Amino acid sequence: MKLFRKIDSTEVEALTQGRRRGFLLAALALLVVMALSAAAAFFISLRGNEQTLVPDVVGEELIAALLEMQARELYPRIQLRYSSTARDRGLVTEQDPLPGSIVKAGRRVKLVVSQGTMVTSVAEYVGRSIDEVRAEAAAINAEQNTAVPLLTIREPVMLEYSSAAPGTILQQKPEAGLGIFGPTLLEFVVSRGAQDPVKTVPGFAGMSIEAALAEIGRSGINFTFVTELPKEGQKEETVISQQPAPGTEIPADTKVTLIATIPLSLKDDETAGLFRCNVPKNPYPLRMRVESIPPQGDKKTLLETEYPGGEFAMPYRVPVGSILTLTLVDKELYRETVGLGTAESEAEAGSAE
Figure 1 (tube, rainbow, N blue to C red):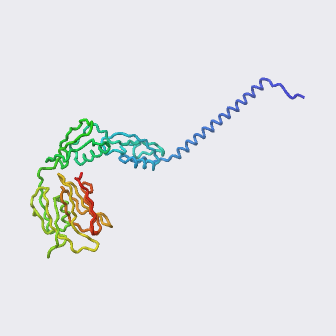
Figure 2 (figure 1 turned 90 degrees about the vertical axis):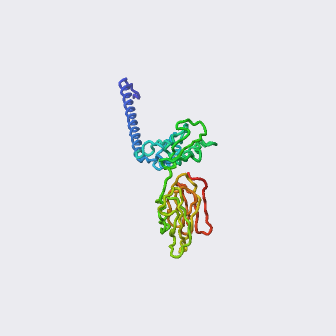
Figure 3 (figure 1 turned 45 degrees about the horizontal axis):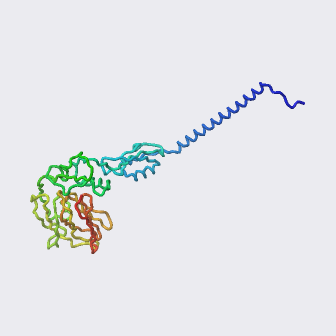
């Protein structure tokens, strides 16, 4: 019996080709499976990343912008640049993609954040408000963080009558464009308004105190109050006389004295008196506001007018424990809690900026 037989070359070649074909088919099948798996993973990834709206963060502080980006599952790429004003320091000035764009969650958003100003030359200040320039100079000095301020404004500024609005810078020294290489003194000539402005005194006699305060706000006269007990036939909380007389033409900075009666019929939870303080004098009237904040309820504006400064006195009738505040150009200068037996007051010295 034959256990082995001789295999000829034809059979060997056929066997080899069969094995090669099987290997190629297996490799092709493996490649197909891998391609299908990659495609499935890609589409699953696309479906997993939801679309989101890019928020508008230009003008916001960096921390607030980052929180908004985090809430939208967006990732910031931050760039720092100098800007034209010190007030932009720490704020987002540009972004890409633009606000309102629809992108996939996980997208990177470029945020350009201001480093403030690189002060190399004197700016053009003519035509700008002196109060605005004071604030800008203070911001630049804080930004430089040096022992000696980089920009100092000579105070008091020189004043000149002009048709320009009060507080407008008319001249400056050094001139705009001059290089800054160290601490620099800025000198300004500022408009004090038209020459010798004249006002006609309104008639206040017979008005309630509330109506008189409203008329002061409309006319913008300089004023002060004196109070006294009502005499027989006189109404409470009423202006009974004034000086100068109604119709008199006076310089705008002349005080008009109003004599008014005090209230006698107060409720148990009410208090009345004169709200007094010393408002810093200014070369031209600034916007002033007096408000009452009761222990319960909403804040109330008692007076809003243009005021040049000096000794201030105004009658009030408010709930016990109310806080009276005086604000000049959005800066609170004085506050007092009234009607609690011992007044708690707090004043800030210095002129308003």
